[in-house]
Length: 311
Image 1 (cartoon, rainbow, N blue to C red):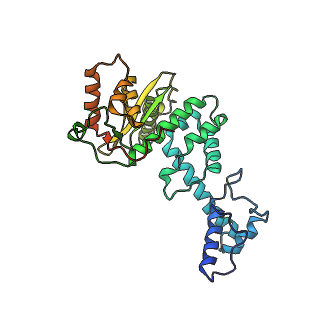
Image 2: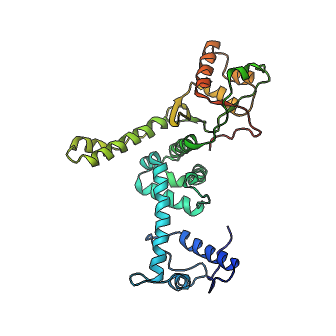
């Protein structure tokens, strides 16, 4: 993004002036808040922000130019913080409110929104957490797995869907040459913690909390809703996050089944993918897995690019 102008144009006399004004306004609105969640007191060149705001924001009978601009600045950042909380309830529950707030602020400061939609806001969160493990201490590995799982839910919810391969189409090519693509909305995760059950327990707790808030006489439900979801203990877990009939699902996978799907996702042939499952896997198991995956519509034509691994 281009550096914003130091001053707003005195008047809009051309499209260049309008563009300069828009860049000035956007930079002021998206400028990070100060330590007290207010508009910063200085502009990028060190001038008082109150003086800069007066150049392109009119005051009214209740608010100064600075105060009017501050409202938009705060609303912008509060909306982003709300969006991250909505997308990452499990991560917030695992870190606690204060640590999660610090993580969100640091992330947005270094990875500001560059998309027209809030859907993509957390797309770089996993990589940011990987580079900054101190922000999620003392359990950075667990926090990262939760973030990966919750981003996979976003991908599953509205990720691209390609035409499903039929059994007849599969039969036309021998397994030694057949390559299958996985639907872009399917994410395969090899995890060291059962974060799928943890996130589901957090969502159930939040649902109970919401229910309790609407039934003030139900003290038992309210007490239960306030209990913190216990953090998951280490346990190797393989899971596919996907959708079916416009609903999100998490499907646990056998380790050998995961190896087959992972190999297919990397573009290897069907015969080599099945071999990756290991010699202990019986043909009947493989047949049952493929019957299930075909029914779920997970296979599509392999695109020109190989499937990226989950972040």
